[in-house]
Image (cartoon, rainbow, N blue to C red; front, side, top):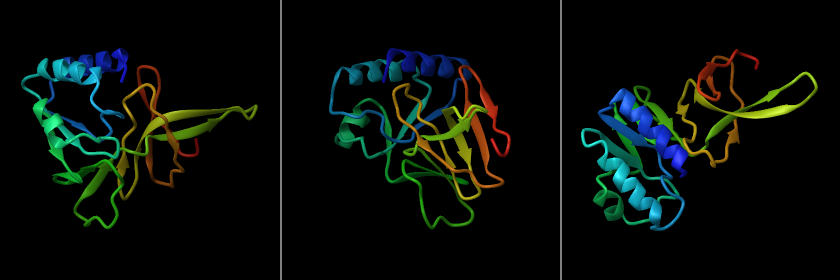
Length: 167
């Protein structure tokens, strides 16, 4: 997590004043370090916001470490009707729920006329579930292959752009 990431998140929360913020896992990719102190100060800057952590494969510390910072811990998912928020994609979800997950860090590959390619992070909304992109600047991506009818929103510098089918 970089200073730029914290600043981006700070400005978003300061602008929108959400009641709840959900982290879909992998908040940190290591054991306790200086980033924890930064996270603690960050969370205290928004006392009227509840911060939820849906545990991911890289959230390796005991729950108490997260809870001491005021994070609400959920595992393996958070039910928020009609959504099921999880780190991993979920299988066999009842029809009245729509899963939203992280972990995959979706991207699409765009091709130019000269066969050049560009991997672009995106939000993915399929018939069965949604996959959110990673927030961090240094997080890798996994190229997805959207199906007809799926909705893809590309992440450009400072905007979100709906992808045209066939892009």
